[in-house]
Length: 170
Image (cartoon, rainbow, N blue to C red):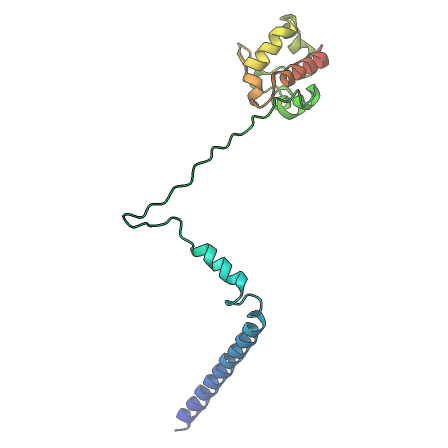
């Protein structure tokens, strides 16, 4: 019988501790709710307006015979932005767009400052180099994508970058 009594005492102790723990959580939750309920109450105008906005109907239903005028659609015209002059200088364009290939020689690109690689290209003329840089070019040595793959660059910016690279490599 003593083993049963020990089990019953231990069981009662554990149940008692759990009840005290549950009551503690209940009291803590009650205190927290008392402190936070004043922040956003259901009967305030702000809360009611927020609920009304969330549940307002998207459209309306009219019974046969009820006619309402639909609002006239308004077409908005968006002004096109004016073209901007060359925003970046040749060195800026080179550092932003051209350096990836012309700094490493990727895809057969002549490296900036390497006179041997640029001599034949410069001999073709600056207009040809500008045209190849803007429109793109596929030659035996490699490929030049149009505007180096940066289609958002203006022709003037690309031309300035070509001038910069020719100046640095001649």
